[in-house]
Image (cartoon, rainbow, N blue to C red; front, side, top):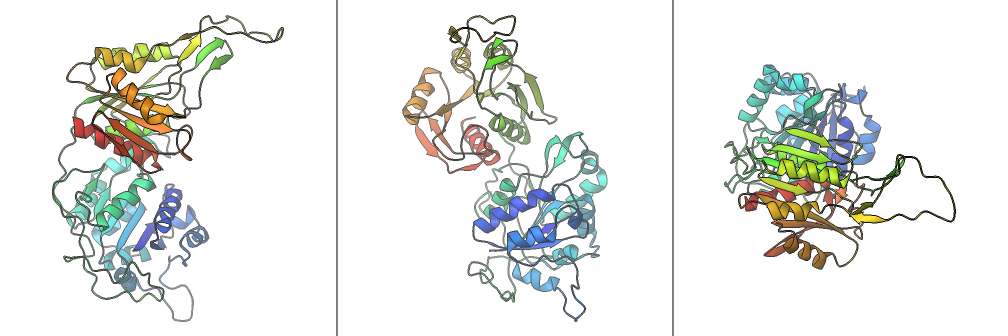
Length: 453
């Protein structure tokens, strides 16, 4: 497939490198088109190295009469993705202000068009921006909405460009015409019952001198007016999570030995953070209880409670569970804690140090015991051996609705990584997934949760 990637002047431009690599690794041809402002954030050399193609920025690159044809790009492409899309570029797209190569390419595009906005929260909320986005949606452009979190301004709110892995997933699903893959606004995996996705017609074979075998000649049913896709315009059905309260535990616990030492583990809290943000995107009110982490989730619908020890996490989680409809227990809670904690730093004396450890509260089993019929409980199992039988035993013993199994034996999975490889174990079956970004893994887990709500 041939994909035009548009890059505009946003700090999020660095994420576009990851997006390009996603497409290229899957065998797709990528042509980068960058605005003059975009080159202030990322260099054409970087983009050219990733795409193995010269980057297009200006109409005329030399003085010999040659020029870049936006018309040919519009014929060549099977999809156009503008990521990041600034408020300025969105406004120009909406009103046809063709003052740079990117906008003229968009206006010539005969394939589905996707935009992934990135901007500060007040720019995102401004009526002008929202009106422009609505215009684009009406013309068939798919808007992959930004997420909430800390922005470049250090303010917290909606405006962060969606993660590259999720953008790639949305685009490829839509172009592959998978059911429910594409709507005009994408905040999370939609549940639109309509079987159709994006459709377009390529009016002629691409004239690029280096056509890929998998692209130009492909003809998708339907027709396109104005260079946009005919993705379904109906809004997706509301998520079963909408309006519900979801309790999540995340990160490690630290069990103090003395004022300067503790027993802990390598959990970063990235998986729990991804789950919190995914639930919030689907309309849930999230209560997340976090052990010590370097980065905490943020958003209007996410409330963070910080704790240190397993006992503190149990106290917070058991209290919050009362008013929650769902609990997802993702934290790596220590199984043991020192029986006594020294008031002063222990000195190096004698031949060693002996610690007596006692069990910590079993949060999953404790919540499973008090779980009401209208509540759902999801657990996690990180194993190093015999993962499946251990996960199945925990599922029954702790009264879980399903459990997410991951193993430290899988490269790229578990602690500290941005990726994970999981198996979802339910009372009736097993679903295994390949290695994915934790943001994509979170979407898989919440999809399974929605199935049982």
